[in-house]
Image (tube, rainbow, N blue to C red; front, side, top):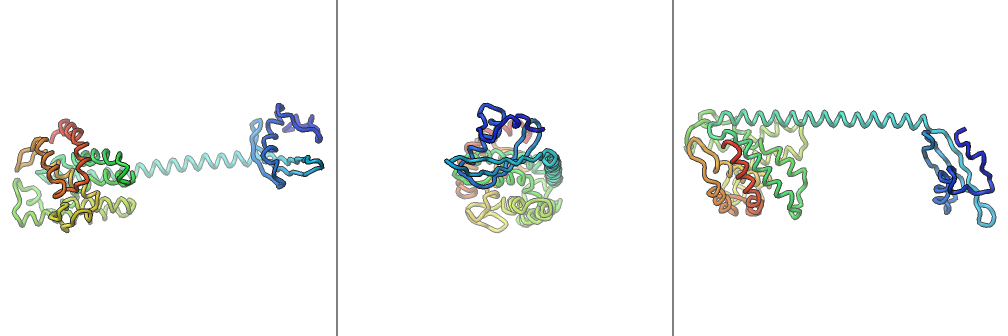
Length: 309
């Protein structure tokens, strides 16, 4: 019924390799020449699915007899296929929903950061610009295979960059909006935003993000004002004790402050800002970041020339 050509085959005569049945069965026979066990094979023929069990019987003069037991497996395979399609669709839907939720959560956090920024007379657009500078630095670092850093690290850093100043939400308006330089007491209050930011980031992200991402985001908020020479805040960490993500954020943060207008200062030229950052490598900044800053500087300048700062 299913293999009508087999009716013309003889048990004592090999299947011709040129016949349909020979093309179907002989490759399995060839693969089983050295075997004397049952072998189960699934195959599709003429739009139906089959399960075939092969038994090899040794005969005289090095000849063998191959016994095939074939069962129609179409209904089961169609059911499995439908389950597979349903599972694949379910996986796709779950992934799409997860991506949507992640994007929504990320956008909410960025909007919160922008809300905090709107309270600060000194740093309008700072979040967007520093995030772009981090992105440009990361683009250069991704190409350096000697760094041995994962894509997950770079992706997390880029996503975490807008959160670096979230702690300013805990700073009094009179200090945050002061149109001028801070007194020592005011600056001491302002410096608390780093620690507060780390707490806020953890509270916001702990239930919705991976521990790896939460750690990166906390470090960016907590340590982006630390200096390579140990004269930063809040902990006065030195050198490589400062998390790398915070060291990268520090370069972006300071560069933006230099080339942007503030109520207490005019923007510096790109050439002057470049010289300041380069000369600060090894004192204020991680000297290993110098080559990435130099390599991305042209793109930074082009970006700043395209936006209001």
